[in-house]
Image (tube, rainbow, N blue to C red; front, side, top):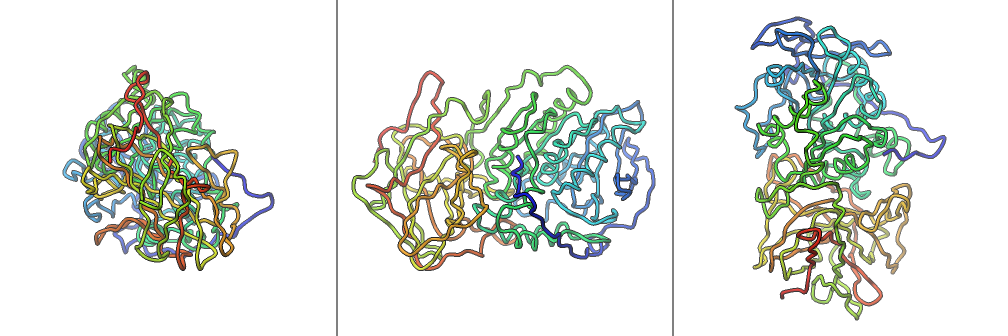
Length: 567
C-alpha cells in the first residue's frame, strides 16, 4: 500500500562509489554459452532496459525440449554466487542438497531445469557488472524488473509465462514488480519479504534501526562499477514518512497475479509483518498463505516445500491441473516452543473467529489480569539500560493466541521529551522458565513477539488503524512536556502460540533492545535512542494500560477463553 506524500515534496538521492566487484570474487563480463548437467547455460546475457542501460543475467534452461516457463530470481547479491550460507552461523540449511548453481536465497536451477523450467539469475542495474546507478526498492528497479520479465517472456525458448521466487530481497522486489502488471508475469512467490521498508526495516516504531541495515548495505550491496544508493544516508535524512518512503513502497492493492506467499513467525524485526500485510492487501483472486515457525532459508530449501512450490508453478506457468485449487487458502503453524508446533488449515488471515480479550497491567504486583485494578499504580525503570518493567499472566486453561496483539500504555518520561519503547512478549513455562522460539534467520532463543514505538511518533492514522493493529503515521513528532502522561498504542507484530494451562505470558517493556545475539550473527539493533532519565508506566484506575490478545477458540462453535488466572 502506498501512502501518498505531501504534494510538491521532493528529495535528493545520495550515492556512493561502488566497491570493485572483483574484491568479492566477481569475474569480468564474459558472455558465453555452456552445456553442463543437462542444462544450457548462458552466462552474462545482456538485457537492455527501456532507457538503454544493459544489465546482465545468467539463464539456465533445459538442454532439450521445447519452450519452457521461466522463474526469475532478482537479487543484488551477485549471480556469480559470492555469498554462501556458512557465512551465517546456525543457518540450518542442508548445503549438500543444493547444487553449485544455486544463488543466495534463490531457486536452485538444477532442480528446476530438470522439471522443465528456465531460471534467470540477475545482477540488477548498478550492481556488480551491470550498467547504470543502483537504487534499491525503487520505482526504477520496479521498471527494470518489468523489462526483464518482458524480455524473458518473449524469448524463443520461453513459453511466455514468467514467475518469480526467492527469499527476503528476492521477495520484496516481487511486490514492486507485480504492482506494475508486466503482461508476461503469471505468478509470484514472495517468501518472507517486507512490504513497508520504513516500518519494517529502517524505523521500527519510528526508532532508527542501525545495526542490520548499515551492515547489509556495506557488506552485501556495495559492489559496483558505477554508483550505489547510499541507503544509510537516505534513511538518516528521512526520519519521518515523506516522498522518499512513498517511492519505496508498493501499492499492494494493485497486485492481481496469482501468489503463493510464505511468511515466518520468527522474523519479528524484519519480514513477518510485511509479508502478512502483503497477503492481506494484494487483490489477487488466486492467493495462498503459509506461515511457519522455522528458520527461513532452511524452510525455503526443504524438499517438500520445493515440491509444493513446483505444484504451484505447474498450475500457473504450465497450465497443469493440480491440487493447488484445492489447497487451503491459509496454513499456519501454531507454536509451542522452538521447532515444536502443529500445522493447521484456515480459510483466511487474520482468522475471522478471533476473539480479542483484554489483559490489564497492574504495576503494583507485575501481573496481567482480565479486570482493571481499581487503584492507580505505577512502575518505573532507568531509560537507557537493561532495567525494565515486566508483567505476567498465568493461564488457567490451554489457550491459543494467533494474530495481532496490541499494547496500550500510559507513559511518562522523567528527564526527557521523548521515549523509545521496546516490547517483548515471551512465553514462560509453569515454573517461570523461558520457552524459546526460532528467531530471525538462525537463532533458537527468540520471543513470542516484539513491538516498538518512539513515543513522539504516537499519532495514529485513524483510517488504517484497527482496535488490534494501530497504524502510526510517522509524519510528525509530538514531544512530551515535563510531567505529561500520554496514552500510546504499540503494535505487536503477529504471532501464533499455544499456551498450556499453568504456562505464562510475560510482557517486558524497556528502553533498549530486548534480544541479544551471539558473535557472528548479523541482526537488528537500535542504539540511537532518545532515552534519558526514567520511564514511568501508569496503570490501574484511570489508566487502562492493557495488552489486547487474539484468542482462538478450539473450534468455531466452542469458544474457550483465557479464564481466571491459576495462580
